[in-house]
Image (cartoon, rainbow, N blue to C red; front, side):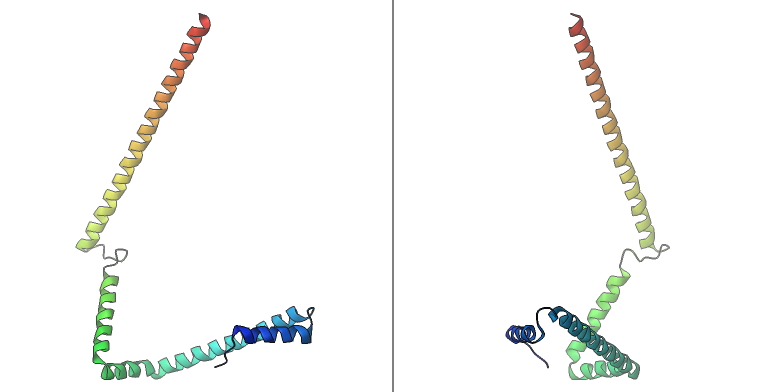
Length: 152
């Protein structure tokens, strides 16, 4: 395909700088960039259209059949991989049947987790309230001590 290295790009850039001039060089590069973007878009569109046509024609199924015929071990491994992926998806904890035993256990665990979080939050609030009460008592004691010292 069309292959340019850094040295070729550097030579092209220097020649462009000399021929076009430093004032018009950014405009030239912008236009070249737009043209390359359009060409890539057209190539991407063509490629996707060809892939879609191949899918409609059933080329992928034929390819899988030929691969299975030429290399049965890889074909068997692909089947094992697909089965493992299906099993992993079926064991996904976010996707479960709430009426099944697993669903009931998951619901119980979620309820227990909420209870634990609530009791932890309650204990933390009680601890903070106790610390605040202790701090208030110490402040009142210090204030009372200051009053008694100022009187004497």
